[in-house]
Length: 462
Image 1 (tube, rainbow, N blue to C red):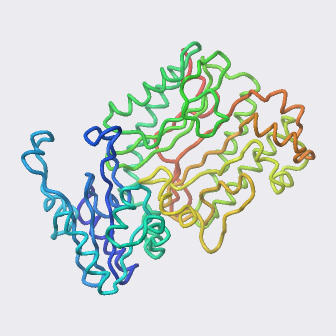
Image 2: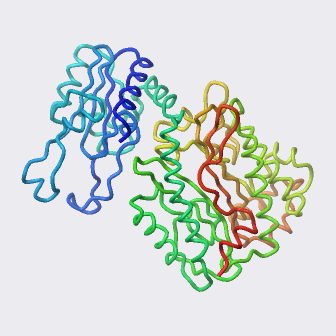
Image 3: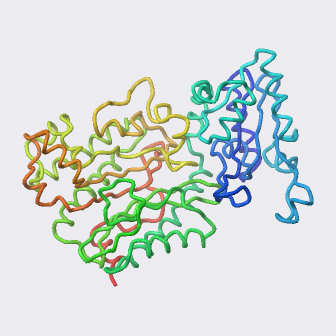
């Protein structure tokens, strides 16, 4: 946990923003793999971690804004439990570390919530992403399961997003710890990728390294010679000489702050000429986009700048034609760059995505586009000091998308389909860094991980 005062001040600010009512926070329970005593690795709800820091299952909290009262609800283990689990802190001891003096058995939560509702007080809660917590909200409030998330407090969502978006120095330090693990993950992966191995043989060692460092991955590792599949969690391909690998991965710090790094590198140590040509475009888009990052700059503008660099590069190589600005305005570049440039990052790798991406990445000044490609942009609003964002441009040759566009004769003024068809099996390249928005500009976080062609080939050398 952070120091106690961190959680006290976070809740104080939240109460000031909400103004009235009762705020209900549900922590997560353990999730069984195949029977109750065989659970998946536990991961606490990120907003519960943010405001209370208690990293154990079965907890809940109430914050009474009007009366200034805060209560932690939990279960004190008996000797029957301790035989299996070892010594356990009491709920009151955990509450004290969070700066809360009052604790009660978890069974008392229902009475407290129903008492507030009887008095016609507003009970604020966040959207839920686990079925068991949706059921709990229904039991506590009487709201039907299917209406729980529709009934979540918009006021609370906006207040939490405003707070969690701005990272403190101690939060940035935690992200740096996660990035130190990412450095080791990428260093290992580049050395191990060899022709004749299966992806799983390297993937397994990457995840094992994370576990051996006392961490866990911040999302399922993407490690594939088929980088054109953006979220490819399949690891059964055999790596061959001439293949390029996309490793999109991250780890968590001890307090669960995430890293998210993507590198693309050659199996066996050397890029082909075509791979180098396309890699340079992606690298330029990554570097020039990062250079733009500063307070007050709309991230949508950064995305479109990267898109124009990609379009111009592909025009220069003959895959596209015409004017780059016009091609991007028409959306022709999305054949090769169909996703958004990046997203917020913090306690969640896609920070606060469960609260609603439109609340996190958009506001009254910018609305989500419905255009293919641009619709996938997770962050579009103006950047502020304290934001941590990813910058991850890519170029992909997706056979199914190419076939569809060609059959529809889509953007013939901007796409050279003959050239594209000749390179249809290219795969994909993505390069991603994690960037802090500072008062005067930006800072790329973490120890530098090889990303120039020369450095990547040196790291990948036998």
